[in-house]
Every structure is written in C-alpha cells, then in structure tokens.
Length: 406
Image (tube, rainbow, N blue to C red; front, side, top):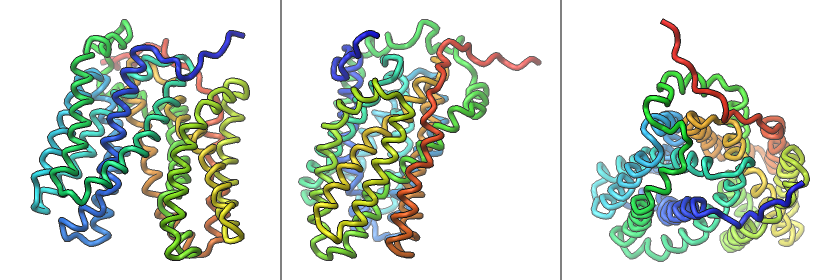
C-alpha cells in the first residue's frame, strides 16, 4: 500500500483555490455574524422580521443551489464565479452607502444570490483538482475555520466605526478574490476535464435536473448533510441559551471561550483526523463523528457539576464536527460525473436547511426541558450514519445523460 500523501502538500491549483476560499470565508464572517444587529439598528424591523431576512440568505443557498449548479455546468465555473464575485463587491459597496431600509433589506437578500454564483463553481473546481478521496475538502473546512476566527474579529472591530468601514472590508476581500480569479484565469480554466464545459458536451438544464434529482445516492448524502447541520447548528443557537439559564451573566464569557477553543481545535484536529481516516475507512469515521457529537451533548448536560465538563464537551464536539462537516462534499466529489459536478454540488447546498430546522426544533425541545433536549439531540447525531457511511461508487466515467428520443 502506497504512503498517504500529507494533507498539507497541495498542488499549485489547490493552493490557488484554497487561497480564494480563505478570502471568501474571511469576508463572509466579517459581516454576516453582525447582520442581525445591523438590520435591527438600521431598519426598524422587529426580531421575527430580522430573523426572516437573515434566514433567507441561507434558505436562498439551500433551495437555489441546484439552479446555480446547473448554470455552472452550462456556462462554466470560472465565468459564473467572476459574475458572482462582482455582485458581492457591488452589494457590499452599496450597503456601505445605503441608509434606507427599503434598500438595505433587498441588498442583504442579494447576497444569497451572489453566493449561488460562487459556491457551486468553486466546489466543482476543487473537485477537479482533488485526489480520488476528495481530501482537499478537509483543507477547505480548515480555511472556513480560519475565516471564522479572523472574520468576526475584523467585523467586531469595525462595526461601530460606521457602515462605510464595516462593509468596505468584505467588499475589499471579495475584490481581492475576484482579482485572484482574473489573474489566474488560465490555471483555473485548465482544471476542467478534456470533455470540457462547452455547450456541445454539457447536458441540457433539463437533463441535469433529471439526472441529479433521480440519483438516490446523492439524495442520501444531501439528507445526511441536513442532519449534520441540524445537530451542528445547536452550538451557535441553543447551547448559549442553555448556558444562559445555568450561568446567568457569566454565560457570555464562558461561551466566547468555548467558541474560540472550538475554532482553534478545529484547525488542530483536521490533520490527525485525515491520518486516522486513511486507516479506519469512512464507515468507522462516520460512527466516530456521530459519537463525538453525542458525547459532547452529554458533557454539556453534565456541566452544572463543573466547568471542566464544558471544555470536555467542546473537545468531543470539535472531533465530531471535524469528521462529519467535510464528509458530504467528499461524498459528492466521489459521486458526480465531470459534466454534472456543478449540479451535484449545487443540490448539496440543501443541507443549509439544517441551520434553519436545527434552531427551530432545538428551541421547542429546550422549552420542554433539558432532558428531552439533550436526549433527542444526542440520538439525532446518529441518524446521519446510514446516509453517509457507505462509500459512493465514483461516477466520473459515466457519460452525460443522452437527449430524449423524439
């Protein structure tokens, strides 16, 4: 058996794509965590309306991802990414100048549309540059974690400086991403397969939709991704509320420390996780990831006995997160044929629905009591196992769907 290539040993194309992903992540986390505060202060909207606007950005990605992916397959990943990045820069630039609620709300909603134009194409290019296992998506997860550390620090420092400073920074990061894509266009274009993304060889939108929605293996992976995000969303939604009830005014400080610990451990754990996954295989890793979440819920439940339980919980949580969060993208990479990668990665964005359903269900359960909440959430972590544990048979060599006979 050949030695496993170290995860950090990237090709030039992979470094290029991960650099863009890092710029994207920092820009996103510099603004979006503060979106509820900004909308509340500058639009006069009530809490439900603010929640609806912020949630609509994620729901747009969830339900519009397939359409964005089909466009990627038809028009090409790089051209659509360029258009999406231009839209990002324009929207953030307009937000820096906008003061009327009638302008601010549509601009925030436009961010969801811009995301649809960038994410499926970026993942398709990553898939073309990846090895057979799709381990590059573990690096992508690490770049997201790094952005989640750096971005909020930048946004928090600039939020009170005014809209111009606050929104100009993410606009600058997206502009840098756009410049990177423009300057390295030739390298990115070379990533597409010999059959290419030209209109002659690409399936029609109808054929792409039919093939994507009929692939039961893909639908299972998407459902598994929804369940992973359903559980993962609890850390930023219900766990702080649980801590607030237990620790009162100290909860904010405790949670901030846990969140930072989670981000740092997420970066440190990924290399060991990659090494272990090469020995144990996917099924064992999915079971281990689900067990990590369940043990974390148990530790959080036991935290009234001592703060050490909170930190034990965040260690188990980060292990489960590090194993399971990159796995749906890795599975889609294995499943998708070259001409359908955009559509497959676009449909996989439906898992964003878990970020909406998780807090909603968690709120009802936590109102019913801590025992029902932790019992149900701990058990829910294992629902993704049968959906993600089986290794997908690659479909790269399959031809594009043939046009229907007249």
